[in-house]
Image 1 (cartoon, helix red, strand yellow):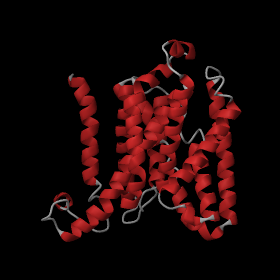
Image 2 (cartoon, helix red, strand yellow):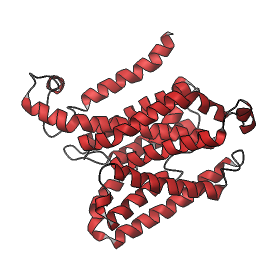
Image 3 (cartoon, one colour):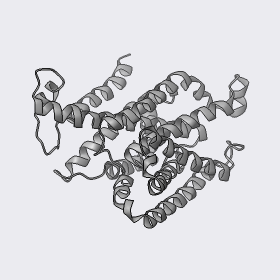
Image 4 (cartoon, helix red, strand yellow):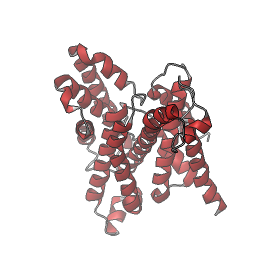
Length: 329
C-alpha cells in the first residue's frame, strides 16, 4: 500500500511543484512565488493577475495537456503494434500532421482556425499512418516482423519531411512562421490553445478509463484475445482514432514534439508496471511532467530569450532512452 501511494504521490507532487514554478521561473517580468499564488485570489496584485492568469497559467496547462496526450498516443501505438519502438514520430504521424498543416497554411491560412487546425493535422497524420500500415501489411500480419512497421514509418516520415520542405520553399511568405512552429514549442500558448486541446485531453482520459482493461488483452495473441470475446479489429480502430486525434491536436498547438510518445510509456511501465489500467494514467502524468519541465528549461537555457521546448525534449529524452535500451536502469 505504501509503495503504491509513493509511486503515485511522488509524480503528483512533482507535477504540482512544476506547475507552481512555471508561474514565476525564468520570465523577463519577475514575480515572487507568493505573488504567483495570490494572483488567483481577489486581493492579489493586478500585474501578477494579468501576467500569471492570462499568460503563464494557460501556457502551463497547455504543456500538461500536450505531454499527457502525446504520452498516451505513444502507449496506444506501442500496444496496437506490439512494438516497443512505436511512437507518433517513428510511425510518421507527426510528420504527416506537419505536412498537412504546412500545406494548408500555404493554400489557405483561413483553414487554420479553431478546431479545424486539429482536424487538418489529424487527417494528415491519419493518412500517413494508413500508408505505413499498408506498406508494412501490419493490419493482416500483427505477429510478423516487428521491425517492418518501424522501417515503413521511417520511410514515410522521411517522405513527408521532404514534401514539407518542398512546400516551404514554394511558399516563402509563410516560411518563417512555419519554421518556428516546426521546431516544437508552446511559447505562444494562451487560453485559445488550451480551449483547443482540453477536449482531446478529456477524450484520451475517458478512453483510458473505459478501454484500458480490454487493451490489456492486445498483449496476448490474437487467438487468445478473440477467444475471450474481444473484437480486435474494432478495438484497434478505436485506439487508432483516439491516437490520431490527440496527436493531431498536439501538433496543431505546438508543432511536432518528439520523444514524449516514445520515452514516457517505457518510463511508466518501469515505474508502475505493465497493467494498462495503471500505466496509461501514469503515462499521462509523467508526460505532463516531462513537457512542463522541458518548457521551464527552454526558458532557462538562454534567458531572457527562449529556445524551442522540442529541442530540450530531444536533449533530455535521447540519453535516457539509450540507457533504457541498454538495460542500465
